[in-house]
Amino acid sequence: MKPMASDFPAATSEASQQRVADLAAEDAGGLPTELLGDFLDVLSSAVSDGRPLTRRQLRTLRTHGGAAARQGVALRALLDLYLSSAWRLWRTLPAVMGAEQDPSAVVMAGEVMLHAVDDAVAELAEGFQLAKRTVVRAEVSARREFVDDLLSGSADVAGVLGRAESFGIDLTGPHAVVVVDATTPFTDGATVLAEVERAVQGTKGDSDVLVASKEGRLVVVFAAPDNRAVEFVIAAVRDAVVSDHDASSRWRRIGVGRTGPNVAGVASSYREALDSLDLATKLELEARVVDARELLVYRVLLDDRSAIIDLGETVLAPLTTARGGAEPLLATLLAYFASGGNSASTARSMHLSVRAVTYRLARVAELTGHDVTDPSERFTLQTAVYAARLLDWPQSRHQLA
Image 1 (spheres, rainbow, N blue to C red):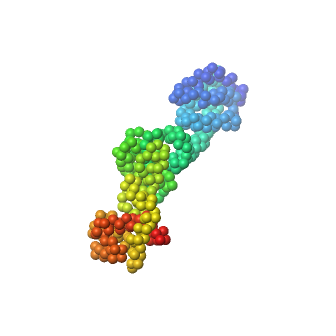
Image 2: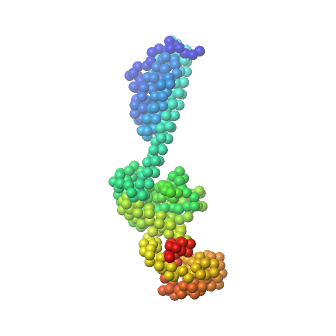
C-alpha cells in the first residue's frame, strides 16, 4: 500500500537540519554545507508527505551536482555529503522519533526515504558527470590553445606568461624544447605523454615541464638552466619513449632546440627542434637524437641559398651524365662521409662490395674532378653533397639551375 501524506508527522525543524548538515559536511572532509542546497528540507518534506521527489526537485539536484563539478569537488566527497546527511537526518524525522506510537509509519518513511535518496544520488551523479565532461573539454581546449600560442610565438608574451602558471610551468627563466618524431602520430591521449612527463619530472625534481602533442609529434617544453639539465631531459624522454610498448617501435628521432629566454626562447627552440628533424631526414643522418647546435653549419648553408645553388650545380651537375643518373653516386658519397671515409664500412652499410664502392668513388672523381681522398677536394665535395640533399637535388634540379 502506498504511504499517504496523513500517515506522517510534520517535517523536522530547521535548526535540526542545520545540525545534520554541519555534521555531514565534517564527514565529507569539510565540504561547504551550501552544496546541499535545500536537500534536507526537500527530503524531510518528501518523507512527511509520503511522496517521491518531484521532477523539479530532481532537476535542482542535477544542477547541484554540476555546480560541484565546476567547483572542483570530487564526486565521491559530494555523494558522501548527501548520503551522510540523509542517514543523519533519518533519526531526527518525526516518524522515526514517534516509532513506538506508530511502528508502521517508520516502515513507510523508510521506503520513501530510500527511494528519494536513490533518486537524489542518481541525479547528482548525472549532473556531476555532464558538467565534468564539459569542464574537461574546456580544459583540454584551453591547454591546446595555450600550447599552440606558446609554440607559435605569435601570441601576447604577457598573456602567455600568465596562462602558463595554470599549467604548472614558469616561463620566466631559460627553457628548451625537444620534439619526438614517429612513424605514426602522437595524440594528447597517448599514454606515452604521461610517461614522458613523469620521467622528466623525476629527473628534474619539480613540475616545471609541459608535455603535449603538436602536429603528430611529441613536444616537451622544460626549464634548461644549463647543459646538464638538457642532457638529463633528453635521456629521460628517450628512455620513456623506448620503454613505452606502443611508442618504442615507431619513434624515429628526437630533435633538440637550443635554450632560449622566456616565451620567445620557447618558440625559437621549438622551430629549431623541428628544423633539426627536417635536416636529419634530408641528410639521411643515422643519429636518433639531433641537436640544433650540431647542425648549425647546415643552416648556414641554407641561409646563403644562391651560393649553395651555385656550388651544387658547379660541382655535382656532371654526375647526372653517369649511367643510372646521379642518385647512386650521391648515396655512396653520403654513406662514405657518414662512415668517416671508410670504404669497408660504406660497403657494409650499402650492402655492396668494397670494389663497387671504390669504383663509384673513382667515377665521382672522374666526372667532377674532385677526389674524396684529397682533404681540400673532399671538403668541397662533401659540402656540395649535403647542399644537394638539403635542396632535394637532382629530383629538383631546376632549383640549382
